[in-house]
Amino acid sequence: MRPGSFVTNAKNHIKDKMNRTPLWIELSLFIALILVITTAVMSLVYYRRNRSLTIENQKRTSQEILRLKMSNLESYLEELASFSVLPVYDSTIYSYLQSQQPLSETAFKEVQNAVRTYYYTRNDLLSYRIHLLNQNTTIGRTAGQHFFYRYQQEEDLRKSKLYAQCAGRSSYYAIFPPDEEGAVFRYGHAMIRLPERDIIALVEFTVNASKLQFLSGSKDGEIICLFDDLGNLIYADSVLPEKADVSTIFQNRGKSDYLRIGGKQYLMVSRDGNLDLSLVSLIPVSDITEQIRESQILGLFWGILILLLALLLSYVLIRYLSRPLGTLSDKQSQVGTGNFAPIDIGGCLETKNLSDSYNHMTSEIKDLIEKNYTSQINEKTARLTALEAQVNPHFLYNTLQAIGSEALLNDQPDIYTMLVSLASNLRYSIKAPNTVLFSEELQYTDNYIYLQKLRMGEKLTVIRQVDDDLLDVKVPKVSLQLLVENSILHGISGDKQSITITLRSFREADHLIIQVTDNGVGIEEAELNKIRDSFREQTLAKPAPQLGLSNLYNRLYLMYREDAKLEITSSVQEPSYTTVSMVLPISREARTL
Image 1 (cartoon, rainbow, N blue to C red):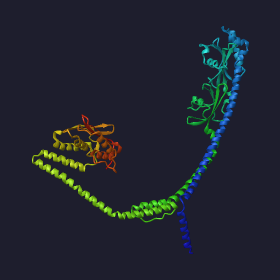
Image 2: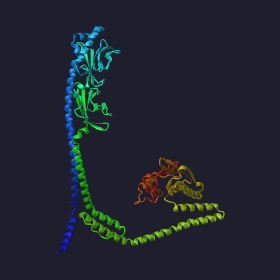
Image 3: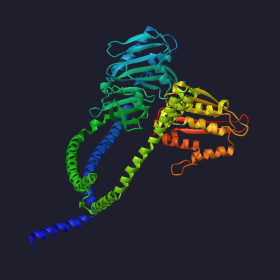
Image 4: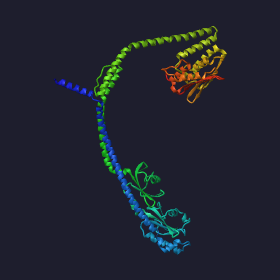
């Protein structure tokens, strides 16, 4: 066997195999490409999982840290509670606190010295004040002062917020936001008289923030907030973001793991204590994920690399799959130029079947073109015949115009008017387009009425109630005249020797309403239902009986579809009447028939 023949046979064998290869095998290659992209997606999912685990670990760590902070805070508050009631254990000071009589200057000095002593026993207080309720007097010192003051209160101390908060709790203590710089909070405690448990004095001091370092955040960017049970922000170790809503932070504690403040997302962890206090930790999520930023960049690099590789493979594979279809498309575009040459695009089994179907189709089209050549000649002949048929109507109305002119020359104006009206209507019915202005349709109808009145005389009366603003609305040609003709033909019967027709037009929303009402004999209910049924059954495939109204209904449906209506009402009882209403859209052009 010659080498050339071997190569040729090999090519033919390979081509034959490819022609019989199903499309699913080729699509399997595409699925392999999808798997590559899926690998990239899995890499992204793995990154997001690591991110989620990091945040979850941070959440657990923060919860444990908050638990320890709350435990330390509660221990500290219990120590403050014990410290605040020291005056009760001094019998002399305690007697002064209970006294209902005004204290002497010496007694006040003793209380003032006791306050000084209590203050200097601690280094975590910025201020110390004791309020003697029975004396309505405050003794103490505030931050920045180096002396202890005493002054008489103008208002009753029992009306103060401090008194209300302490009296409202079984533990007789209260915590308030600080009113001095460098303070964590203000602490108040009530001293009571036993056994009546009446409050006789209030101790109030502010705690130095530098002495409570355990309330600070454990990492950069973290914000620790302390709330009371009413949702009041007692302390924050850092300035809250500008758009932070304190009530939202408090209400969402324990309900949501995340909180968005000012367009930045925070991890929120909270801990409620046993002393009606809550600690909330706010950590920016971006700070938490900083530690996995390197792996994120590396993952992004590999993701882009895999994406580029997937795009390249997709391009190669799609080009391979679409090349036979592209060839078929090019050949199909050449059919319009008369190129019916057979093709063999090869490829898989399905594309091979497509090329075979294309060759069969082009062969059939070529045969049909040859068979229809004679039909085209006949069609041209039919068009010439139709063109010749238009000559006779033109000849007719031109002849009527000539006769009218002759009548005018012979002093017969009535005959002239009749002939001109008839010629005008003939020209209108032949030359007018499918839709005309309402004013033109009125003129055509007036000519028709004029010709009918010449025949009927006083038996025919027409009343017009037309809205002049609607004269430029497009309506179907010979529609109004048909309604008037229908009234004349069917309205006079039996005892009815004359008829009055009222022609009305008006606007409702976006529709033109044309009504033709006559006082003729009316229509029986059974006949009326038959006419309405003929409207509903009207189709192109199954035309209704040759009734003028049914034909008009068919025209309206073809031109406007459901936007137009033809309605008919009638009564044979005196006073008998028939009203036909034609409803046409104003803003929509009719379809060309």
